[in-house]
Length: 131
Image 1: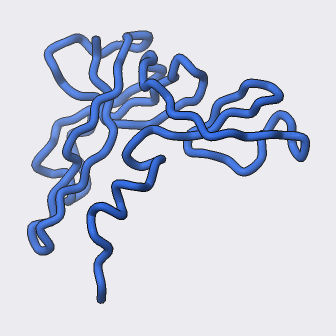
Image 2 (image 1 turned 120 degrees about the vertical axis):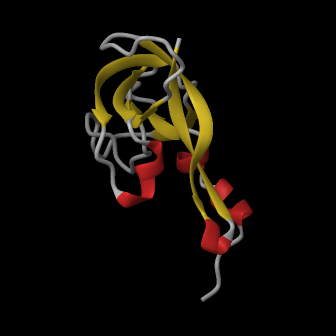
């Protein structure tokens, strides 16, 4: 089986750049990108938008019994982040010593998610860091 080079995966905007879209009619932002605006329906005109990644914690939980792929990272936090531009995004919250609380401010960070030693692949993902 052929494996796509890492450079191809890095070009997937929604995975590595927090790129979604916004409806020009009603200014509703979406991540991941949608084909049709849920407010405007067929009249929607969606354009690509790179979100800045700043927002606030809407909800979060601490994972102490993770799946096998993340066992070395436990305990860790996952949160639902409401971006300043509107969309809600799920992601890991980095433990930087700052208290994590609902309503707390976060900024986008790009970090290693996991490593596949068998194929020497390092997977990166957006995460959020409390500020």
